[in-house]
Image (cartoon, rainbow, N blue to C red):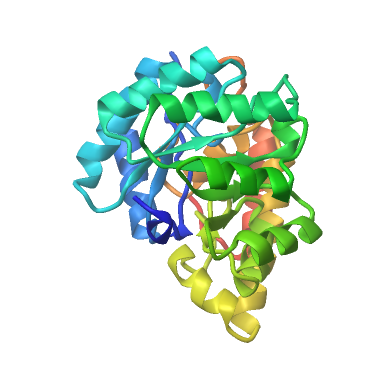
Length: 299
C-alpha cells in the first residue's frame, strides 16, 4: 500500500461488544459491510471509535483477521498501534503482522506522555525497525497532550515508511501549512469532520473521521463535492458534519454516543466496554432530536 492508495473515506470502525464485554463478530461483519456501502476505501481497526484502549493485541489481531475475511480483498485494512509504551505498540505491530493488516496507524507516545524531539523520533525508529508495513501518522493534540509540528512530520516522512497522516489538529492555520508543504508527498487525511469539506479544496486526500456514517451525502462523494464550487449540497453536508461532530463529541463518554447513534440507524454497534458506560436515555433523546433536526432517519 502506498500514498496513492490512501484516499477518500477511511472510517475507524466501532468494535461491537455485548453486555458481557465480548466481541460480537457477526455485528462487526455487519458494520464492516455497512461502511463499504458508504464508500469506504480502507477500514481502520482499533482506532478511537473501536475503543483501542480496551483491546488487547490478540483481540486486535482477531479483528484484523475477521476484517480481512469479510473484505475478501475489496479494501485494505488499517490497524491502530498507538500506546503509551513502545512495548505495547510493538506487541500491536506483531498482531498486525501475524494477521495481515495492510497499513498501521500510530500516534507518538499517547494519552499521558508528552515527547521530546529525541523521544518522538526514537519511538518511530523502533516501530520502523519492527515492521516494513507502511505507516500513517496520527496527530491528535487532545489525546497526545501535544501536537506534531509540520517540521516533525516532515522529518518522520523523510526517515520512515510514512504514506500519510490522520490530522486531528483543530487549527486551520496548521492544516493550511501542512497541506501546502507536504500534501504532494503524503496523503493528508482530515480528522475533525467539520474540516472535511474545506480541506478537500486545499488538497486533502481524504478523511478518517466520525460523522460521515450518518450524512445524506455519501462519504464517497465528499471529495468531488468538496473540490467543486460550494453549492447547496456542499453546505448541507458541511452543516450535517459540523452538527454531528458537536453532538457525538459532546454527549456521554466516547464512544458511547457514537454506538448509540449507530444502533439507532439499525447498525449493531453493541455497547461500550468497561469502564465506559452506555449512553443514557437522556443522551439517546438528545441524539434523536438532533437527527430529527438534520433529517436523519432512525428506528
